[in-house]
Image (cartoon, rainbow, N blue to C red; front, side):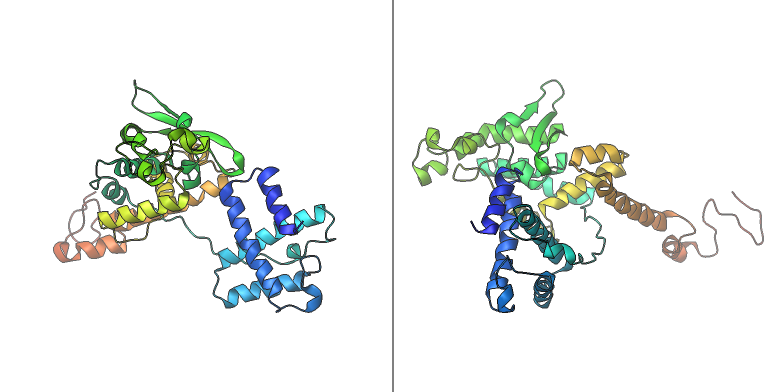
Length: 349
């Protein structure tokens, strides 16, 4: 069997990697195979079984020449390391050539978050009353209310949602990275949007008299795969919604709300974490809510919160340059309240 195909089967059946993870590995490794077979390498290194670390470096140089970012190069190198590690275990090669190549140094990038006002502008924009409009609103509400990843959201089933009539809030069971299951709380606003969508959800099923899906497929609901019928979120054809569809939905809603900035679904997750931290939530709790395996991953948000505190300080503190320049026009010759006058006149504390 082809080593790449064998490795992908191993990921899918033994590691139980998510479909999204398998797709990423498949794309990275297919691109590498095309590079190996295009004749740029010496003939003796034209197969995966005969490559050495020089060939891996040649491939990375090829990526840089095409303008691929360091982060993407690092990811593709990690994919190669995993492939050759699997091949070493299987006795196909003696050493892992990708392990001998250093990972590109990456700049530490802070998460980008929307302000609370921007989130409200997006969520409070007028939505229609059709099934897809209600679905779209509940998706955006849920992403911000829970901080779940897009893959976790589209992988959720109807049975994963629990709501409380007494309190109006609820819980959602999701399957995160590494096939780790966790429960995330969702607030009453998101639950209300979810309930409105669920009442209209049957319209997205095939052959529903008011739905578009039935006119397209002509098949009974019972003929649908169970995985699709059980999905929390359905597309216009009655199948399970994909993460790519969620991105299209968000882009469409951004245009409708006239928000002039690039926003990804993951940015709503960043906004969830940043706003929780700003409101006083502790890092350990945010780590659990986000499903991070390491606290160091969650600590990125403290830098965002600290940056915001610095901005507030610069705007508000009497001795900061920004605040002082803002008061210069109307308060020249007069000390700000709370500042001691050190020249003539009585001091005021």
